[in-house]
Length: 150
Image (cartoon, rainbow, N blue to C red; front, side, top):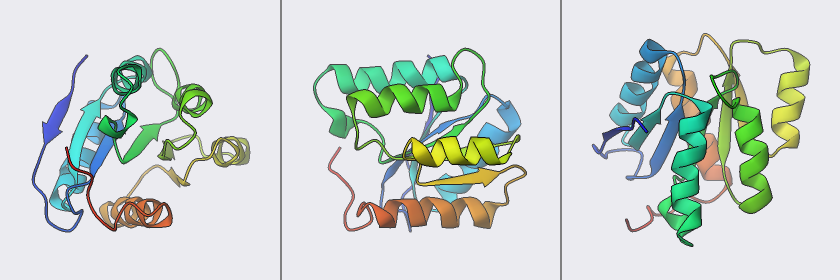
C-alpha cells in the first residue's frame, strides 16, 4: 500500500486527513494543499488502498487510529469511493468522508449524501474550496475542538 504522509500542523490542529485519489497530480495537489492548511495528511491512490488503510485501523480494534476525515474520489481503480464508504459505514458508522467527483451528476451527489458523506465537491476543485469543505466537515462533527492524540 502506497502512503505519502506529511505532518506539518498549523491551522488544521494536527487532524489527520486521508486523501484517496487515483490521479497522481491531483492527489499530490490535494495533499500539498491540506498539509499547508495545517492538517496531517496520508494519501492513497486507489479504492483498494483506501479499504486496506481503513481495515488496518479498524481491525486492530482501535478506530481512533484512523483518519479524522477521508477525502475520496468516486471513480478509482478497484473499488470506487462510494463502495468503500458504504462498506466502512456498515462497520464504523462514525466514519467521516468528503467525496470528490469528476462526474458530478445528481445521482452521485444523492448517493454520497445518503451514505453519510459530509459533502460532495465537483472537479475541478480549487484550493480554497477544498480547505473550506474539509474545515466545515470537521467542524460539523466536532473534530476541530482538539486533535486526537496519536
